[in-house]
Length: 359
Image 1 (tube, rainbow, N blue to C red):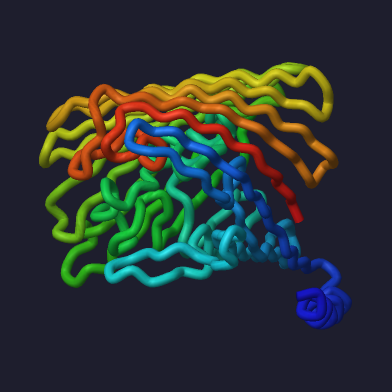
Image 2: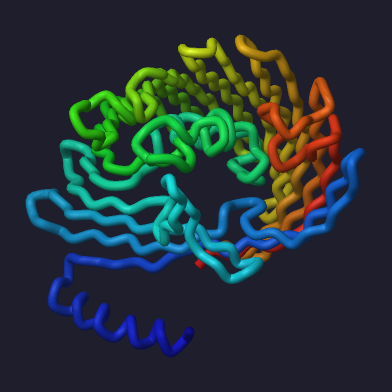
């Protein structure tokens, strides 16, 4: 691996010499934790990647075109460092996508940024910047699964992915404005590329945001159609955060509705960080997830996390959590505590300890 990176660095160094205003960055996160979960239906111990942050790797490039204009590209893929695999399966039939998290090219300048490719939906920015536990435990987070619609079984038929989840959209165009007195906005359109219709499998989104050093607020709305162009999925998300000297407060709310069945799933979350020392961060987060309309269910998650920064790039962590549901989970219902509460149980407890490293 070291030889490979050395071999790659040589041509990149030559390129940087020829184009002094260009840059290519290799970056990533490696995160692994040991987790013990207790359910009524049984207990399990696992070693899992991506607990505090999803393990990933990527390439980011920028070229100065003059006059404040830059060409950009971003390629980012999921890493499963617990078993050495990479990329998440998307589409129907499912196929592994190496750069499943981002694959875009674009232009940026004083006008903002215009990008093309596979990209996050706009609600990810709204919920992500204010998520109560900073997008930790993505595989079981209500904000990721339901507010971000990263649940293939529930949201897979909608948008431009031809299956998979709705969190990221293929064939998309995104525009993000520059800031005007701390305000900004973004619009995004993903093409379903279905014959004879621009409505089938489409995604359309709009977001607005306001950010200062201590305070931020963001909101987004989107429409998605299924492959037949009949069913319409509407989603709305908002987030607020305030960062003090030794604390941070974050709160989010999101809901999505399906017009054909009247199904509505909503997620409300609130969290607080306390920083008793520069290296130590303590987090408490609470989520309430509700399913109404075509069915009725309610679930809560309570999470406590302690993170200790050994350096700017390496952090150790310990977490305890509990999830409860109104009824015993069955294999046929939408599990609001997906991946946390197992089928046959209505509650679960979780203890995790691990290590995260940025490169």
